[in-house]
Length: 399
Ligand SMILES: Cc1cc2nc3c(=O)[nH]c(=O)nc-3n(C[C@H](O)[C@H](O)[C@H](O)COP(=O)(O)OP(=O)(O)OC[C@H]3O[C@@H](n4cnc5c(N)ncnc54)[C@H](O)[C@@H]3O)c2cc1C
Image (cartoon, helix red, strand yellow):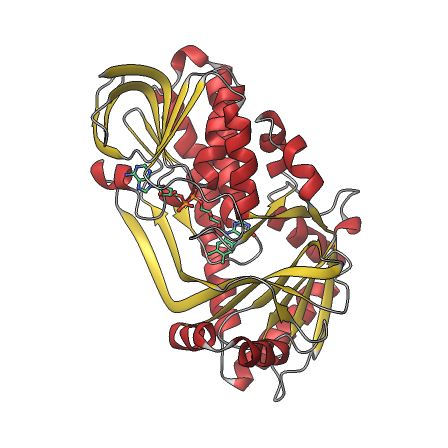
């Protein structure tokens, strides 16, 4: 069977589903395929236990996609980013610095949501759009591009001709591979544990990043759970240590995470399962090919520091949408895709480089280097203009 669509999105992860809603809301005909049906309940097998902190600029894209009104009731606002250095002899806080969103504007830095809930609301939104066809259980099999269209063969035998193929099929993107676009990858030998906890001391909408060695331990606010303050945790460690922690029984794990959290929120109670994620940095050599745009992790992957990953992806999407709406008749042509690559690649490259540096700094285990790190945090923080510039840069806002 042969079909025609304006846009084919390969991949229905959080980025692909957002792209489907956004291009659909903009009036384009869209098909989105993914071999893995989305898990839309926290307790579902294979549920994504990560959360996403959407930063301020992401909100525009979510609003335009008709997603924000669905998500807002579930949001936990992030008003302060607290950085704690616990790199001294004992795992106790020795430097605590608050980056306060109120210093740069009225809005919080962003809003945090569980990824399974994002998928639930995104699938529901797509269901409202008659011009968006979401086909879970179907994969992209092969791709052939021509100047005027991409021809995509799906795993159910359907052939789709499309003006714009969006590769949102993850860090090992089959579309990127099929088109022969190389990647530069950095491996850290590090993994992240992602889970949620409740705790007796309220988070007060503060996101707290605690540095010692092995990588940061970050608590990001979630709405209260069963009347108790609740946070999402991302705990990064060298691979073997992360696997040891993941295999501990719950009581032992809670003891270890209480120590690693420097006791800042009181005893932490594990309320979800622990999921383990390998940590890499990666950037594709280019973000476009004939009739094709790479989006999100198909284009770039960063360690989960400063909530940059999916926020960069929504910036990719915002850029693609702006170009598509400015000249819909040129959707997916060479000029549009060249402009996309030129606008996004240098910005993404700078962020990948910056986050790589932050991650290496956070992994330091030698005491003198940890002391240097603490000194650098003090120095950067004490200069108010530098502090404000760092906050804006982290959000992806201009000076
Ligand atoms: C622990 C952790 C915490 C994070 N926290 C944050 C945060 O707070 N803020 C933030 O911005 N980012 C965060 N990130 C990053 C963010 O989670 C990722 O950027 C995002 O989930 C990646 O989404 P994606 O849709 O690009 O990829 P994926 O979720 O990997 O989706 C790719 C999809 O493509 C599908 N696929 C594979 N093969 C095919 C095929 N042949 N055809 C069609 N589809 C295919 C897959 O089934 C999959 O569903 C975090 C990451 C980690 C590891």
